[in-house]
Image (cartoon, rainbow, N blue to C red; front, side, top):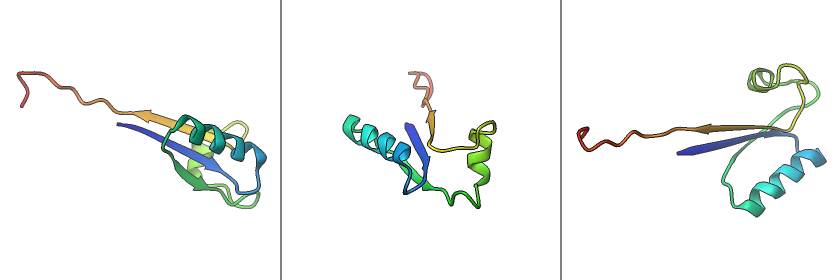
Length: 71
């Protein structure tokens, strides 16, 4: 299962562009609103430690191994 998270801010035009692109492509995502500029979440700082800016897209892909011998 693929999981997409988007860290953004409601008034950011850059976040809006990413949201529009994800909707146009039909990608489901979880939107995480950041409280900028005062409080940046620990997750935002973890995924973008250098610039500490939004938008940030986090894409994780989990694969399930299916083998005929494993039931």
